[in-house]
Each structure stands twice: as structure tokens, then as C-alpha cells.
Image (cartoon, rainbow, N blue to C red):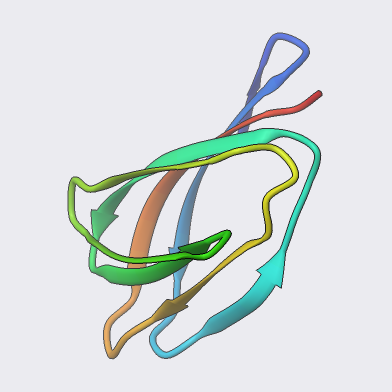
Length: 82
């Protein structure tokens, strides 16, 4: 994880196979790109399946979560803390 200035945090994450986050939210925006693998994300009411080089954006305060499949997913995630 790396912090830039007062608000930006960037993290390279690997999420193991068949893991799930059923939902959470936070008061800052978040975005990222899938580097490897495949992940299903829900952002508010929207459900999307993302694969390598797909990007995502999560507005502040919106409930979101994810589920991985049979292989790990690697993400580069950026948060803008408020």
C-alpha cells in the first residue's frame, strides 16, 4: 500500500479463490483495475463481472462488495480519503 499526499491511497490486492465480501461502504471514492483473474462486484444495485484490464468506480457512501471465482483476482485499487 502507498499513500500519496493527504488523501490518495493505492493498494495492489490479491483476493483468493471463492472469497466473498457481502457488502460495506465508506465515506470516500474508490476506483481500480483488475490486473489478473475475474471478480464479480456489486456497486449499489449494479452487479458486474470484471476481468483483466476492466476498471471500476465506487462513489462515496455506496454499499459495495465482491465475489471471486475459482482463481484469485489481482486488483490495483485507489481510494480518495475524505
